[in-house]
Length: 114
Image 1 (cartoon, rainbow, N blue to C red):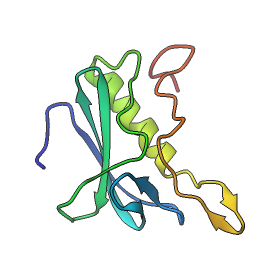
Image 2 (spheres, rainbow, N blue to C red; image 1 turned 30 degrees about the vertical axis):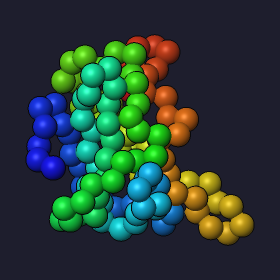
Image 3 (cartoon, one colour; image 1 turned 90 degrees about the horizontal axis):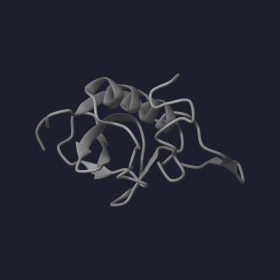
């Protein structure tokens, strides 16, 4: 998978619980996260840093109300990375993996407001 127009990538370290994917369950450790604009949605994928195979983050694609411009997509990417690197809930002593289920891709005050 090469670089796509409008794609944003970040390299980060997962939380203990990792990032939940549709294909292989939770992935942990050094990860790359991408966001890619698609027709009316944004696809979010993750892979082990330096690996070739990408996995779809659970909850992807997301459908932001207003992600038309590059600036807005960059801000959305930053929010997604922050969300996916925030520790999950602790259940019976174990941290749950993060995902995009329930992730709100916009704000009441306007898209991109931090």
